[in-house]
Structure formats: structure tokens, C-alpha cells
Length: 294
Image (cartoon, rainbow, N blue to C red; front, top):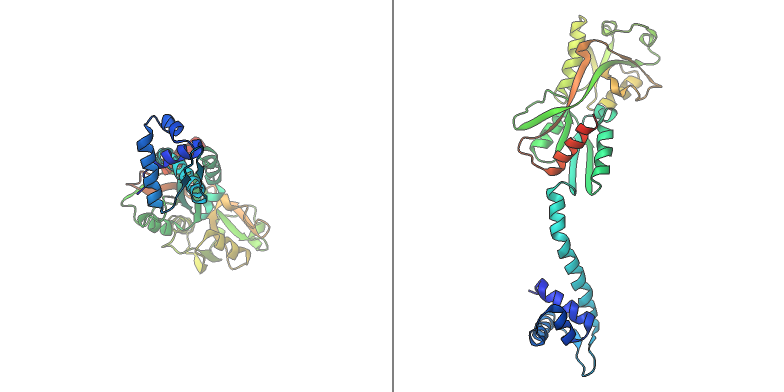
């Protein structure tokens, strides 16, 4: 194998095209330098430098070797800085997933600020349910998740507050209830509901269900959608009414009428979840930037 030291020696000889001057630049004597170049040529299987009495010159093979030698040395010089950048979380990749409503809260600003602070970090964003994100964290398919607690299983996961939101009633704009000035959950008792699967988003499901129970009825769930955007789209299609995050009141606002709930029980928290053993610098840096945006 050719060593980096030998590549540096070849580059200097190729630049000087004079063994004595090259040896002086390298602070070594000429005979071992000539021997080193000969070993490189033997390894390459080609003559790289034509030796003449008055001048030396590179062969076609030598010119190609010089180009690759410079590239290799340049890449080698990048190794240590790249390692330091990765260790500091200044480069690399962050796989970040989130529940749909998170993108209507402070998450976009946090992602934007992080990208500006760490432009060499690639951020992969994925929308998923809380349950799917929990599975992905355990499988190490993602690094950080914005979820709505409680989690199906939180053993081995670490959570910290990220954002807050509250629930709102969503009805089609043509629905008679859309004209009600004091629309409340109790007014939905006789309505068909669009929900999401409880096993995919227990936080949303339990809170919405609890509001209905507190209003004295069991919701008539006629259809489910796995994502909150799907729930709202089904409301727009007049498949039923729903209880959704208030932060998403801008979604299909010409087709869906929203009424934000003042009930303290309608408030919920979003959390940033990661594996308890996760020590990725990019995750730490993102959370630090996100906290500074509060």
C-alpha cells in the first residue's frame, strides 16, 4: 500500500521536477527520495516521471497519478475536521418525525433556526402518528420525535416539553352547527364523528373522548383516518364532525368551520422524545436551538 507520506513526496517531486530541490523542500536527502518514487512506480506498474540529464517531466500516467494524489491528500486533510464537526453536531444528519399538528405550532420555526445555525446538518422530516414514531425510535429508524403523550410504551425513551396546543370542534361549513354562536361539545351529541385510531394516537383519542364523556355522551364514530389531515379532509367532505388540534384551524378553512374550546381539559402538550441512550450531538443541538426559540 502507498502511504500518505509517499504521496506527499511524489507531489513535491512532480511540482519541482527536480529531485534535489524536492528533497530540500522535504527536508530529506535525495537518494531515499529517489528510492521512494521508484517504489511508487513499481506499485503503480507504470513509469511516472521521465528522468533526463537536464530536466525531468511527468508521463501521462504520472500526470494522472498526481491528480489523484492531490485529491487523496486533500481528502485526508478533511478527515480530522470532519470528525470534529460530527462530534460537535455541526455536520451529519438528523432524522426528525412529528405528529401532523406539530407543523402548525413552533416546530417550523425551530427547524428553520436549526438549519440556519447548522447548515451542514441534513434534516430529514417525516410526519407520523405517535405510535409509529415510538416504534421508529425503538428501532433506531429516527433520532427525534415530536409526539403527543402518553406513549404506548415509554420505557427506554426520554421526553421533554416541546409545545402546547388545545382542541377545537371542526364541522363542515354548510353544517347547521357552523352558525351556532356558542357551539360546544355537548351540541355534537347526535352527530356522526370522524376520529383517528386510538392505538395510533392515544393522546388525541383520549382527550377528545374525555370531552365527549364530560358532555354526557358517547361519540358515534362512523369513520377513522390515520392522520389528522385525513380527519379534517373527511370533515370537509361532510363525513362527520370532529375534535381536532386548534393549531390546524387554517387547514381547509373555506370548507371547515372551527370553534376553539376554552375548556382547560382541551389543553394538551407536545413532547420531544428520544431514546434514553441517545447521545447524538445533532439531537442535543436541535433541542437547544428549539428551546432558545421559546
